[in-house]
Image (cartoon, rainbow, N blue to C red; front, side, top):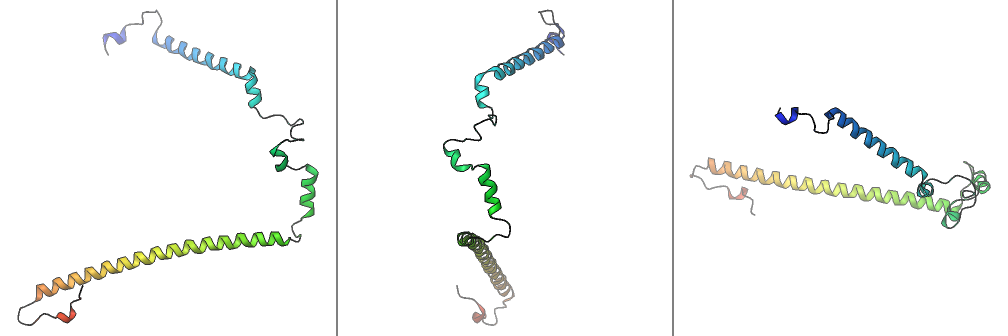
Length: 156
């Protein structure tokens, strides 16, 4: 440690006392901000409104989304689990099933095409390696006495 680290601060407080005072100052500032936010009008307008009046009588676009409680209970009472579906509902469900089947078919077709191209490329590479090794074998074992077997060479 240096000589400067051992000397006490010039203000008369130790290092631990200074750290404690910063902690208390930070805590006091946070509590002040919290108190100011809880008393301000903007914080009340940002909060979720209570259920007095506004939920019972929505205005604007909310009126189209939400329905009255009686209407909602009648909706579920009118259509039970075993209730008969309308033709429109049947058609909509059928369209959804057909669209899902089409997406599945396209996905599997794409995967099959990818695999086929991969397999074809792999097969071509294997054939090329086999041809090259066969050609090298023939060159190595050719004795010069007999004509090379041209009929076995693949023309490129």
